Length: 257
Length: 356
Image 1 (cartoon, rainbow over the protein chains, first blue to last red):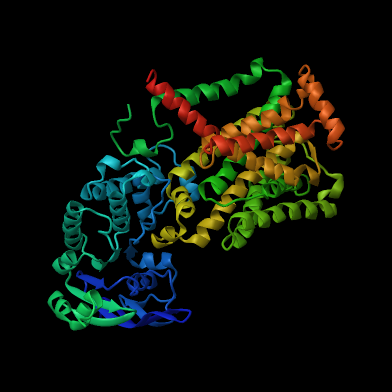
Image 2: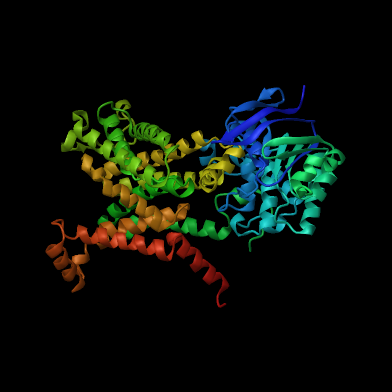
C-alpha cells in the first residue's frame, strides 16, 4: 500500500485547467518536491490536498483513506499539516500562542474545564503545562527563543516563516506540506532552513512535500522531484533525471530559437 | 521583573504578586462598598455588574472571535424572562432557573450562530439585529410572557422554598452581594476560557480562518460555540437584571440596549476582559448617573435642556445621552482603537519607564 498517493487530480477554475490529471506517489519519510514556473498549479495541488479546494476529479489517498471531500480540519486530524506561501499566521497572538494553537488537535480541554481552570492541579492547567513544554522543544529547535512572547504581526518575514513551520510541526503531522519555505529569506537563513528540513525528516519521521524555487536547495535535499508546467505533469524522478529533462529546461529557460 | 521560572506562570490567574494584590484590593473594596455608600449607588453598581457580565460575554464574541452581534438584548431578554418564568410558573429554585435560562439563551445563540457561518461584517450585524428585534416582538405578542403589559419577577429566593429552606434576597444590598459573587465567577471564567484551548481557537478564527481550519479547528463548532458562550453570559446577566428591576416589559430589551452593549465593548477595548469591565462601568455610569443629572450642571445643563426641547424629540435629556455616547464612541474609534484598555496600557508603560 502506498503511503501517500495522488491519482488523476484535476481542478479547473472557469475555463482554466489549473491542475490537469496529475498523479504521483510519495514514499514514507522521504522528501518529495514539486517544481514549476509561476502559475503552474503547485500551490493549487497543496490546496487540494489540505482540503481548501475540492478537486473536480481524482483522489488523494493517505494511509488507505481518500482525503477528497473532507474538510480541512478533518484532514489535519488525519495527520496532514502545511504552511502557506503568503504566511497565514494569527497576527494578534504571540509566537507561543501560535505554536500552542498548533497543539489544538492534541489537547482536550473544553469550554467548561477551561473556564474552571483553578490551580496547577486542574486538568486544564496540567494539559497546558505539558503542551507548553512540548512547544518549547520546537522553539528551541527553530531558534525562536528571543521572540517567544512577541506578537507575530511585528516579526520580520523570515521569522514569521519559521513560526509557521513551527506551528505545522506542533501538529505532529505524518505529512508536512511546505509551500515555498525559503521565500524571502537571505542566504544564511536558507542554509539553516536546509538543515532544519533535513532534521525534521530525520527527527520527526515525517513525509515532506515541498514547493520551492531555490534549485540548489531542491536538488540537494529532495528524494524525488515532480516538475509541472501549466497544470500538466512534465516528469517525475530523481534530481538528475529532472534536471536533464528537455521539457523542464524548456519550461525554465525557454527555447533556443 | 518579567522573569518566569515555570510554565504554570503562563496560565495562572494572577500573573504576578502585583496583580494579585490589586485584584484582592479591588475585591475587598467591592465587598465593603455598601458600608460607606448610599443606597442609590448600590443599585447603580448592581446594574453595572450585570452589564459587566454581559459585556465580558459579548467581548468573547465580538472582540475575540471577530463576529459582530447587534442582538444581544434578545439573549438578555431570554435570560430575564426565562429565569422569572421558570421560577414563578414552574417553581424551580433560583439557582437552577437562572442556569437553565442561560442555557436556553445559549441554545438560541447557537441557532443565531448557524447563519453566522456564512455571514460576515455588516450582513451578520443586520441578521443579529433582526434576531434581537424578533425576540422582543415575539415575547411582546405572547400572553404567557405577560405580553406588552410586562412581567413582575417573583421573590428572589436562593434556597429551595418547597423544602422549607428559604433564603430570600429582598433588598438591593443582598442582591448586591449575590450579583457580585456571580460576576466574579463569570469574569474569572472568561479570563480562563481565553487563556486555554477554546479561547485560543476563537482568536485563531478571528485572525485567519483558513489557517485555523488547516491546524484542525472546526469552524462550524467554534463559531457557533462563540455565539453560545456569549449568549450564555447574556442569559445570566439578563436573569439577574430582571430581579434588579423587579418589573420589566419587552421594550426594556430594545434595539438601543443592544447597541449600548456593543458600545461598552468597543469603548472598553475589543478582545480584553479588563476592557469590557472598564467599558461597561463607564458607559453604565454615564447613562444611569451622570447624564441623568446633567440638567443640574450650571449653565451647561440648562443649555442642553433648551437645545433638546427646542430641536429634538420629546424624550428630553435622553437625546443628550445618546448623542454624548455616540460622540464617545466616535472619539474612541478615531483616537484609541484599543479603547480604555489601550489607554490603560499606555499609562502603564509611561509609569514604568518614567521619567524617560
